Length: 254
Ligand code: NDP
Ligand code: 8X3
Image (cartoon, rainbow, N blue to C red; front, side):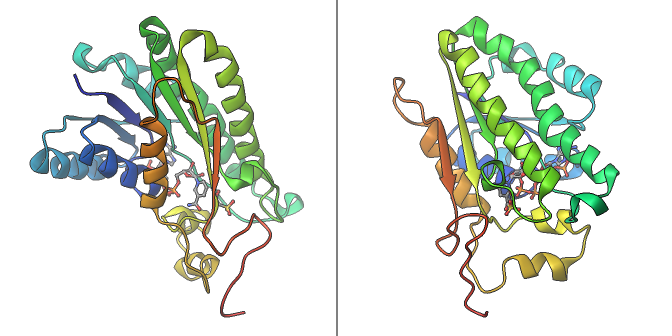
């Protein structure tokens, strides 16, 4: 029987790249996001080109009832979820704390922290029953350091870092592995979302350097998932070669 991986936020960026790489490596996939059409296009692409089975679940991770019914309605043959990749998330806005937009704050907290908790709470009991599972939490270098105008986004990723450590402790006796992956700058839809569609501002984030791509993170995820049974990678920090941390970035054009 193939392993089943549930990936949140599989409609773009890191989640989409991970979906493709896990499909190439014969994992069956439950892919989620809010954009139904993208989910169906991706499902068709994978099922047309491989022997991998794909189940889609379209829901807003901020909505507790939607999360609960998306998971409880999973058909029985899909219920033994082996891997949960908590990837859905975003930054909204780039402002000082005194000028911050409270709707942006709520969206980040509700998605990155509460949404991650809702889905984890729905999936973990099955893993405990089966005494098998691996949870990968996509945090960030923003979960390790706080940078100017990053305030609430950084706070949500610090929370993911704490939740990751807490999961590791609570799930230890149940044989469930837990890993956090903390990327630096990855060129995805992330900055376009953060700057609310302003492509010029988004492109500026990566100017003068060669950023990570979604597939770089997907490869780390695959490596993490394919370690021997007795090995757990607790946390991984990965940045572009030109980025030392949130503050030190070498740009060729400056
Ligand atoms: P993208 O914007 O490309 O992808 C974000 C994904 O999250 C999309 O699939 C989106 O799906 C999903 N998502 C967002 N909000 C919701 C929601 N309310 N309900 C369900 N799904 C949602 O960005 P990335 O791939 O870069 O981001 C993935 C993760 O990586 C995030 O947690 C981000 O914080 C983290 N990260 C990103 C870095 C970067 O530099 N890009 C660096 C470090 C961490 P849809 O819109 O269809 O709902
Ligand atoms: C996303 C990368 O640089 O905005 O987590 O923190 S950054």
